Structure formats: C-alpha cells, structure tokens
Length: 198
Image 1 (tube, rainbow, N blue to C red):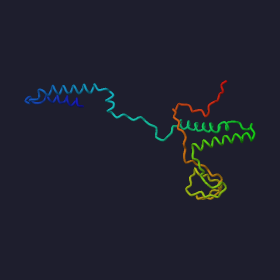
Image 2 (image 1 turned 90 degrees about the vertical axis):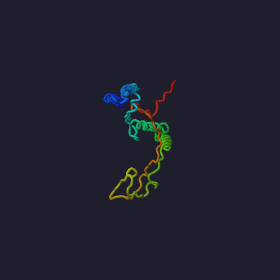
Image 3 (image 1 turned 180 degrees about the horizontal axis):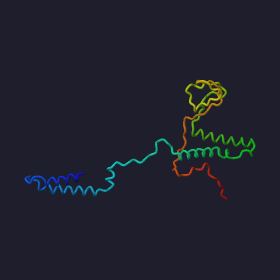
C-alpha cells in the first residue's frame, strides 16, 4: 500500500509546476523510497506475512463429551478391576453347574469381598431409602423416576404410599481412572492370559 502511494507521489511530482524549488528532488527521492518499500515488502519471509493474517482455529471436540472409544475402554478397565480383585469375570463365565453348592458358595464369598472392595474404592454408594425393606413408605410428589420404580396398582398422582420392596442404590461420587487412547486403538484386555513357562 505504501509503495503504491509513493508511486502516485512520483507521478504527481511530474505534474507540479516547474517554479517550485523542491520539484527536482521530489521525483528521484520518491521513486527511490517506492522501490525500497517494494523490495522490503517482497523480501519479507512468508512466515511473517502469514502471521499477520488471522489463522483459522482448528475444530475441537465439544468440551465434556467423552469419545465413545474412551468410554468403552474405561468400562473395560473397570471390568478388569472387578476381575483382578474379585475374579468376577471368571465366576460369571465359568459353568458353575459342575460344582457343588458349597464350592459355588465359597467362590461367591471371594467374588463378593473383592468386588465390594472395588466398588467402595471407586464409588460412594448409599441406599435411596434408609428404611428397612418391608416398611411402609411415602413416595413424594415430584419423585425422581431414576430413584423409584413403582409396581402394583398405581392410580392417581403422587404422593404414593406402599411397601418398600428394595431400598435402591445411588452414588454421590465416581472416581474411576481416565484412560487415554486413540480411536484406532484396540480395547484393552480384561485380564491377561497367564502362562507358566517351564
């Protein structure tokens, strides 16, 4: 832009009346400045010119939305923790019909203790209702549908009165490890195969 203005000034200097005393110096000086500015503009590195233009910001995923691949991997990792501490997958995938009730009961104690430990480490689990099962309770108006499941003869609107069949469970805190993985990465193994080398 400056170079164009200086070139216009050179042209204008040619039109000025000859009586003006500075006319003889104006045209060569203006031309020299215009050439220097043009050289300066074209000799600048491309990087500097690119920085002057605002760069388009790359698209980013919406904040707070986990990628499906990461959510799947975190679920598998949680299942792996239940397997590691409570042997849950072994217990559920094994055919227990071949074992006696005593053997199944003994295995269930190990699964129970290990899985309970994992739940207590990673969740703060509390009952939805504090009353003992079998008690008569009131379900308030505006109750949360994920905290109450009404069964039996339901007529009218809340509040409802009924017998507590199951206290329900809810969590106030989840503390699971976050896994970083690419979309193309395979899901992690639940438990590795153990091989005794001889």
